[in-house]
Length: 193
Image (cartoon, rainbow, N blue to C red; front, side):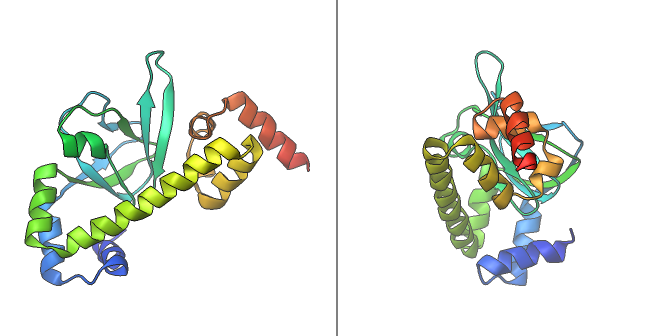
């Protein structure tokens, strides 16, 4: 993905100037990430807003039994990170790792604050992202409490058609709140119908 695609992404949300774009790129840090490499580990205090330039990242929570619970999968032009930890200055509750080789831009809280001060259009951009994320999370909660496993899986594939080819089945099952074995049975059943 070229810089122009990132600019186009911003422009699809808000009217943005060349100065705004330059300010953004001055404040972010580019990083290439290998498959299975962590950008953030649960308990870290050095945290970032993470823009995925290319690839796929998984945000997950590890419980006291060391089970990984997938919270989010992010692809090209998605943002991720532990907003609670970033905004409230505490250690991260989540880990973020690359599911495949990925390229990301990291934006620290301090640089985020500078960005929205210097370029107020980014405040509107992030407001739009946050409201869309809240809507998405509310829909996911409804799916989790009211859909059958089959309905959850079909909706997952509909919303994220490419992810099933990229993300290991155990993480998709975790995201849906079912076991990998049950997901295998469900996929076999759907393939036969």
